[in-house]
Length: 114
Image (cartoon, rainbow, N blue to C red; front, side, top):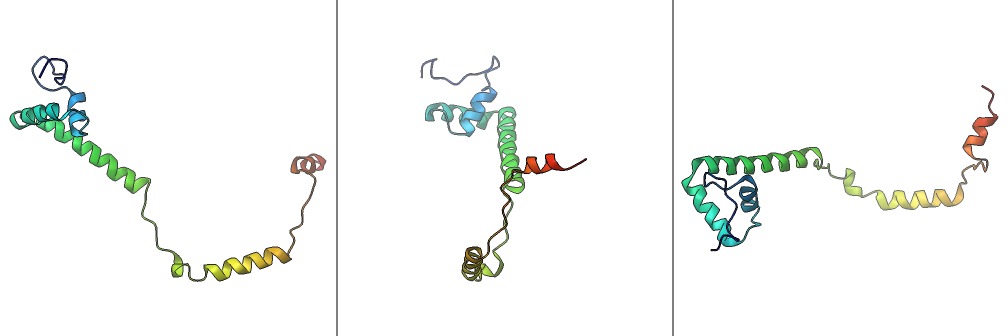
């Protein structure tokens, strides 16, 4: 492996944070991932940093699922009454007119005396 394709290492011979993250995400070439994984098997310090990154990603994913993607309740009565309600609403809309004021709202406000 030439020096251009080797993962970046700090002066002490350990992979840097970026390469650990790229290896975690499987975004490095297989040879580089293999080299980093070999180093992780030999180095407790780097393995601990790598596992901390994994935990951080897991915490983020769990937070996102709990906070932004909460589980939804099932539909009431499985929406069995929906087709009938929709038909009824459509029929009501066709026969009832809603009063409409053609004068814009801000003109009506302007005419009020404060």
